[in-house]
Length: 461
Ligand code: PMP
Image (cartoon, rainbow, N blue to C red; front, side, top):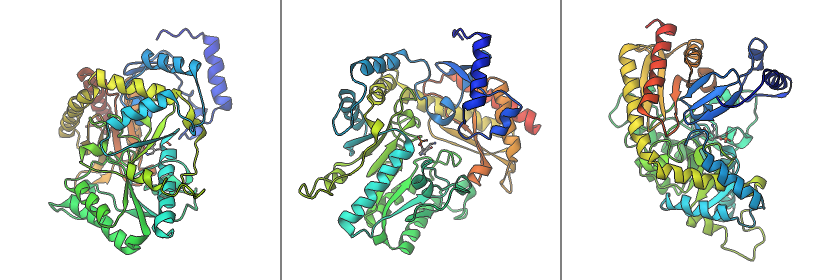
């Protein structure tokens, strides 16, 4: 770590944190016995904390975000240059980086055509929900307003996105939620609620159709799904699932909203996760990897068909998308996103992701041979999960405290991994890996070696 930080400065920073910060997703009682962790510097795949300890980051900034790795001067310089020239103007006007990034992004998304800039994944998803409601009012007398979401999927932290949240335990104590959101079953074959069958994917999709028929197809406006469910336990879709989902949406005139907040911009080895499965969405939302955390930017992307619905009656003052996001006009976002995308292209990071993703799965599968606590390994690209079970036969989830000890053991070894918590998903305990797309074979091997050691110590295997 190069950063010069004196002992006095450090004491002050820790005190300020203790006195004034409210950390995200943290039970603050834990900070009574330990110091807060402060990440001081990052380079490539590695970060350094306030004690100068080096960590190999297996989860890209904790929540699968820093796709191109830390310390990219090229992105920082582009953002700086843009900010001193023109930092902000409301998006009723355009900006130079806003236009250029929109064009580049759409060139990676055949069939899509319009980009709407916002700040966060939750917000991007909210924009879709609003559009679906408005389309319902414009075309269907307000009746086709329901939005289907899937058990185990997560779409954000705001009240409407929580209303579309498939992880009940996350929602506890925050209700009541918005009306008009209806849950459909998840598609995790490992916990096969549709039995041990050869056409699991089709059956899981048919379960969505059952909900549509129960609700009434003329009341359902959209279906919102993650291509690979992230926080719900890295759930990859079974074969045949997406083809059937697409057919069902077409049959009942239901708009398909793909939440690419995690999978987007390379994470699975293609630009977007849905492109792994031949899906044709009406809406795509993305956030984390768009600028890899170098600036706060998220996008709601849609088709010309949807866009056209909002310019059909120019004389009607209500007939446009009456929505704004103030900081959607901050040019730091698209300026960073242009460089982020260029880095992925120039360094061949999609290809690297595919190759290294296979290595992650191979390594984790090898660990499963050795550690009976691994019930199933799942993943796509540099996005993988190992579900931990107390008993392989019954698939009883492993004790959550032990899963957390695996994460803590890796941290002690200087490797950061993640885990979905049973108390949050109500479902499974899955170790999660989402290293930056620049990961090398040595990085991957170091991450899985740390997991190997941790599983041995925690579970005695
Ligand atoms: N969708 C998915 C699939 C996510 O994983 C997340 C965040 N973890 C969100 C939406 C919400 O994004 P944000 O935190 O930027 O609002």
